[in-house]
Image (cartoon, rainbow, N blue to C red; front, side):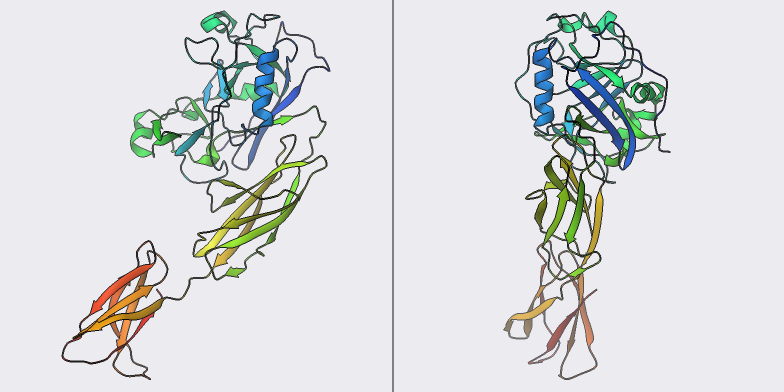
Length: 404
């Protein structure tokens, strides 16, 4: 069962009044193609300058593209900004996370300037246990009043922003519970029934506990079940979505090779930062160019190929996902007699990789009668060999390969 979010308000007392000198950002949450809600935050630029500068450095570098919420403890914290996945729209099993590339850790500012408490509805930086000055990319929302603990632990957790809109979206996470939109990847079900998750670089197995997902019940998560996060800069006044379109290949077109150049256009009222493509639910690939873009795709799958495309503007707004399908035709197999010695014909087949072809033979050409010889499977390179030794003393044979 999928879910959408509504709930009661979260209160943020003892925080500075709104000011035009503060930066404003929007956390846009979704799972797969399902919007979940926006959370607007006012950052404390003057009060916590190092922390805000660090956070905006990640935002403006595009480091939070592809990130997801990896930890939800109702009435405590909702955390993200630590890792990315290659395709948040994919129906494939959730198996791989890439650590967000880190800038140098920053100095803890909890005691710098005004002391802002970890009340519900505030945004703070996560850090390593036992190291107050270790915050990098990971952040969290306080889902409850955590001031009695997080204001004291590990030098205090620096609050650097407050929620100004979308508190009801955050409060929805307080209604989640174990196996009801929160799963524990280290429990017996997920360990024995689901694929392992690996953290890159390093290929180390990792189990996400308290992982929020877009479904109720017990299941193995797919990438499109994760709560994806977009961080949008609001101060430019640009909240309009960019657009994107695919020019080539045409919808449903048939291509004969395993590679193709995809082209298209994109537009935005302020400016574009990137166009991303996802081929057959694989990881995102960066197109060359923006308003007029292209990408050279290789290793096309025989049969239907699915291409999803989105553009991102300079404020962090994402376009609606555009889908284009096309078909790669199976190449005809090529069969040759590579060598012949006494009584044996050495056959060399080139065709579609990992595919079974039926070899047939006849003694005379022309003929309408072919006899089956063997079903021969190509390897990953699309090659297969077979030595045919006919009975008796046949001096010649004619062969052909029949597509499956």
